[in-house]
Length: 319
Image (tube, rainbow, N blue to C red):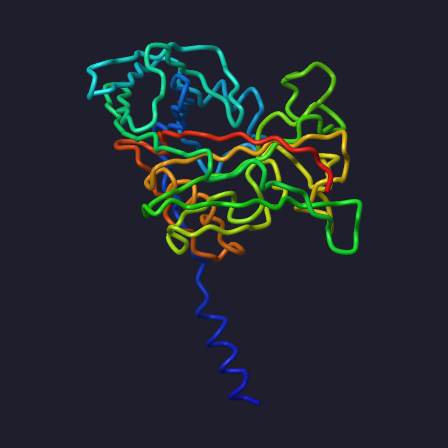
């Protein structure tokens, strides 16, 4: 008994209070920008946020007031043709996938062209470059798309598609969908995009792989595959959208001949694809998981500058 008491005293007397100094998070310029075939460049420019002091509501006005950069000089350069485009600062624009506060006008995206980005802010220069890849109509045949009933449940369906991969290695794409007349209980972000109809505000990535695909293992092959309804980043809960996105129906669409779904297939170069794939993989399970490094192509800052060429397909939401 005496030995046990001595051991307990030794253990308890050796305890020590440990404190950690969390390093200050120095804000960095964060770029979320793209140039798409047939469109001008669009960029959202912000300061990075402190991960230990960030609002749970990303879209609140205070976040934008505090973090958005509105006094940088942003230039797009097509060096092959010696064309420059100084982007205009705008209050806020809305693309089909995100927001932006800088918009170009002099350069329109073309397949096969490389576009350099130069940002000057607080005596810092941030650079990046991207290329818009080619995308062929027969890569995603329109007549191959169809909806298939969910097994043992004819109220829900998923999308079946076909892909023809070119025989050149390195084809990368992100796949999105949007239900045109999908309705919400309330305006998802109070941005009143379509009056009081409350349609889905943006395209959302399909469920599998976060919508990110490449041809590393399927180069030159043709195959069919299922596509499942994704979950919008703006949705607070799985039941925000009345479109089969809660519980066991997550990943499916409601069968409704009156509804139409638009599929957007966006080709991009490998460095751009690496960024989006690393974002998707940067979600470790639990607080002790090891996050992966996000593969940014921005020199001197964070984020992504990417070129893209897209195909659009529309289909009624009914097998």
